[in-house]
Length: 291
Image (cartoon, rainbow, N blue to C red; front, side, top):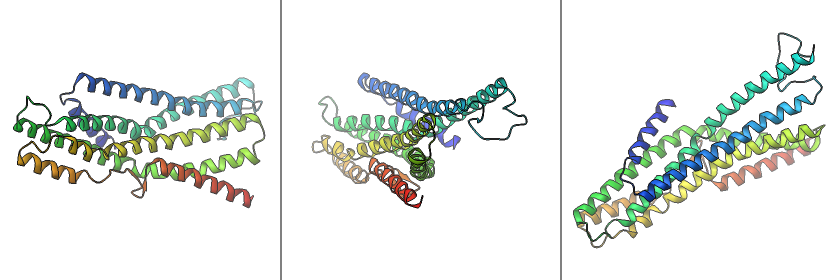
């Protein structure tokens, strides 16, 4: 996976080196800021899961830890041994949660920047042929360069599709099952308020995890649907025959929507997210009847 991610960075470097206007550069900077905010938001939720789990254990009067694992000593022998052990588990949980956060955000963060570059490309395509100071040959060169940049964007899309497809599919199944089970425990088996808070935060974090993926993958697909209109908005009819033929071929190439698939089966869209929530509710109802 790492070599492929490095190759994506190289492809993004090529897109960044394209002559951008000040407005387009500001747009990319805003998207980078949005990526930072999204990372902070998801980190907060992942750390909150760790914190509520530790809080639930801390209210047990030294009886339980965050994880019921074997220890080479009796952690209940004294309060300071218990709290040191709990703090160690909490620190490990924070590290693991942070690592999971970076893995889970690979797809959404890349799709945010990929969508931004695609929007900039659409803007460039729409303006081709409307500058009276440019010749037909220069307009044709602009079109060819736009097609090359579109190819780079599609290469990044294909790499991301292959990297996150199986992972997102597993996350979909996991979220549907885990959310249903956690809600079942909250409704019928939770014995204290701290357990309810811990399970609710964990359920919300699981939902947020796939919601973010579905939203930004869906928004990228929506932008790809605007490519044909962008090509048609260019000044095609006043250009050379080579320009017109190339533009028509480009239109045919971009007519198909670029939908990101989970497990090469399920589209990663907000509609799929709603279906997963319905599945989770159905599993909760089934488990309740079998209780």
